[in-house]
Image 1 (tube, one colour):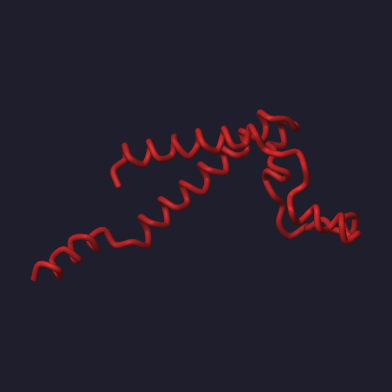
Image 2 (tube, rainbow, N blue to C red; image 1 turned 90 degrees about the vertical axis):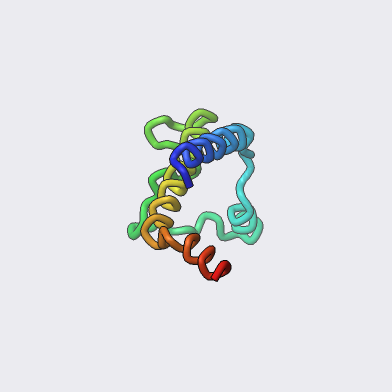
Length: 106
């Protein structure tokens, strides 16, 4: 994949993510809803093992609100996209396509 294609794909994902995050529901997600319905919502323990950098889909220094949610969504997209590109470059051989073409021709 060429660098220009990667940047265009990232921009499209960020725009779609920002638009989707702007319309995020303020209602609890499915897991929180079931926990409240079953009566064990308040029994959740804080985890000291793993801390989420953007818990509740918000950037900590920005407080709550739509801008914080949109920023968290865009940052999440950038992190996942960057990780995907990194792992593809590390684990996928560059000459797989040329080998496949040579096998099909020869």
